[in-house]
Length: 520
Image (tube, rainbow, N blue to C red; front, side):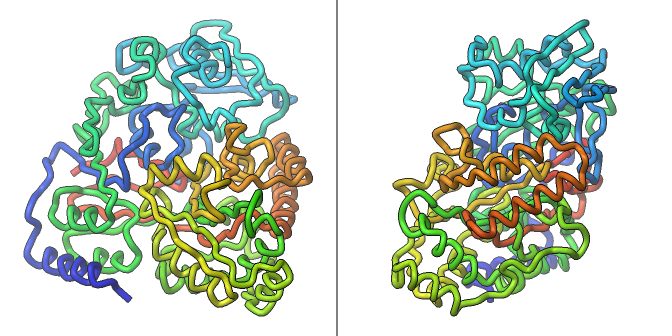
């Protein structure tokens, strides 16, 4: 059922489609309505998909995800070789590339980027922190035998290495600009990509312009203007008014209205996304695994995805997004596919927590967070049916990230989160290992620890054969279902609403927003 506010937004959609929009954005500028202001434009510091959507247009990596897939193809490196033991990666670099500040892109620039993240003694290490440097912890040494060859020596085989290089954490920044801007680099980004940075006006915009010296085909549009519109009703209203050309993460109950309105078009793309609830395993009710299993049995994933999200997401039963295919086609285990409220109540009674109050941390919006408040209320109702009282505490997105990423201890019993990842290794390795607790620099906000899981994840990232990796991840998934550190709930099909005048844009399974071919 539509809320009162949404009802009037839907009416506005229909009126706007019939009468024409009030404003029009400039023909040479694509205006994007973002779910929040970026936290940083330094790709080595950023962790949010909201920020990555801007970064993907400023920066590039040695390799990239091929259009429409998660396959790896050349980017700033035109070729590479891998040693037989899979511990030495040698990249041959393009020789016609310059950073936006005019400085040369070469092997020493590549070395600077990775050593800034990995070397605690690096002179610009203080420009961090670099929370996703985990991605490259296998790098033992970097050699630059000539100006356009860079060689990475790994301590052991590391199967996600190329995929991690294609992720924003592997994007390459200008060493000269880091030296000049120091801690201010995150607000003055310089890369090699098809667009270069113009300005960032807090709470109003980030403006990029076409890079006139780009080594490849120049961008089709002159400017990109990213506007932070944290309130989803504001994003919808601005879209209707013609003040923005593109919004993403459109509420499910209004997608169909945009789909039917002549002034707009809706595009969608599935990808490796997971929306879940982190459980505080260190203290409170969810330190008891019986309670964790109970809430997993109580949540009605099918109803949330079918009725609340209206088919824009699928129910998630695995701790690994289905897009990675670790179970193959149609071979998923049953696990918690059937709700069992009686069993959930029995587990809660056995644990001694009948009638307990649970502090549930919730955000009002955020990249990949779907309908966070409505989903929280649905979960609240589900857990009320088994005798638990969820107390919802809501925060603005960037504030929420600061609290949750710092760990749930002392803050709450459970919290929402969503990740969009590039490899099956990424999410569990950064969020479920003992070595990834917040105080150790990771994102294991619920303080989960399981030695057998840690060993499986370490073995999987050293395993190159895809089926062998999948076997290890299936075993890891079994352990996670038994120990239940989270409640996996939904996997989203990302969507975007565009002005009918926008062409040349396709969403990517990587969830990165590549806009160089977009035009009006």
